Length: 124
Image (cartoon, rainbow, N blue to C red):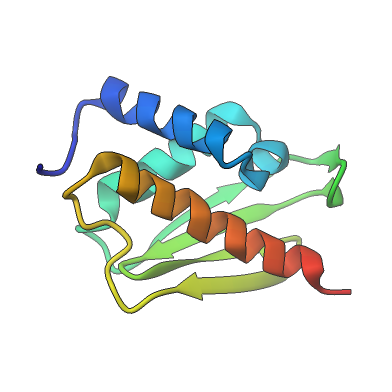
């Protein structure tokens, strides 16, 4: 299988993974932004050495309290997440997207982002 560029097919896969993994990204930046965030990472992971996205939710969340700024920076082998100045990076030794299985790639993107978010949340 090659890289999927049909946005409807990609969107469906992203929505399913965000729901299955009960992603923290949803509560931080909302459903529409979370979908576009993951789609953007998938579509650009083989084309850029770094892809940054900034969000300004300015809302109170159950887990994180009041959040003013969230940034997600992706690179070939991982992501870095910033939440109000705190950051965490999660990466592996293989490319984030192998473009062989859409669901596996989207699962990896969401899992990497959530792992970085959980690391930030676990700090005092």
